[in-house]
Amino acid sequence: MKAMVLHELGTLNDNPAPLQLVDLPDPMPGVGEILVRVAVCGVCHTELDIIEGRTPPSRLPLVPGHQVVGRVQALGEKVKVFKPHDRVGIAWIHSACGTCKFCQADSENLCSDFKGTGRDVDGGYAEYMIIPEGFAYHIPDDLSDAEVAPLLCAGAIGYRSLQLTGLQDGQKLGLTGFGASGHLVLKMVHFLYPNTTVFVFARGGEQQEFARGLGAGWAGATTDKPPEKLDCIIDTTPAWIPVVEALRNLEPGGRLVINAIAKENIDKNALLGLDYQLDMWLEKEIKSVANITRKDVSGFLKLAENMQIKPEVKEYPLAEANRCLMELKTKRVLGAKILRIE
Image (cartoon, rainbow, N blue to C red; front, side):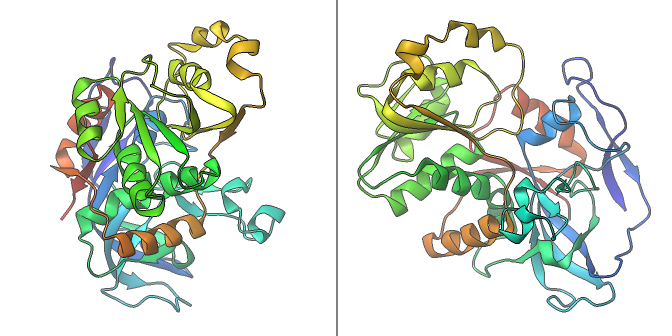
């Protein structure tokens, strides 16, 4: 099979083409596993964190990718849920132990044996991949492969982030960063909380205009002050400055939800500028998002079907994965990016 493979870690600034297109043996499903022929795979900022070592892979070489849509090609022994040719989705959560207190409480995202697709096992930047059947998802018929792929991470993690805000209809929500996840959260808010105004903080004017076009009530730069304080803010950026600015824009008792698997260190000194009395006092909260659960993915897919949510996507062929990643790193992105594998 054809696959884009990572052999060593490093920044894209030093090596703008870290993935190599190679031929690999087709994987074989084991007991309880399914073999999936990949149609499309979404491209996520987490891939940059893996390649550049902020959330390093557990092994190399590695095939990245964790927003996968494809068809079941073959079944391992004891597979009960899926059959050949079923269309399935694969998300960031590849597996967990199933027995610890977190798994037993449907919080397998906190399991110490959590394995990430495309980080701890080979992912979807390839023609085929395998997944335990309990961690694959049936895909709604009326959503295309390209529309579903970003829902499996950007959408599902946005769904979890929105739940963690505790937002009530009519309250004011801020979104810091407006890429794949942010634009899907905005669509969700319009559907679930019709009386809520969304304030978007985005670095570029093009992203700000994009947000307004999708219904944001206000859009400005990361360091701009919104016209009023906000009840909740979701930060989807890899940087620290947006965290500091978000805390300053919260109402007393407000909550900041940080939706990032890692933060870059280039602006970490921004934290030294925090003033406890002005920025953090009055019972402001900070909540981090750690991975996703299977309930997040399945719950969001049902919501997406009801909403008929249509993410904005741009497609690239598999061989152009490096160019796609560089565009993601340099913020030349509106909506979501996917690789077309077929």
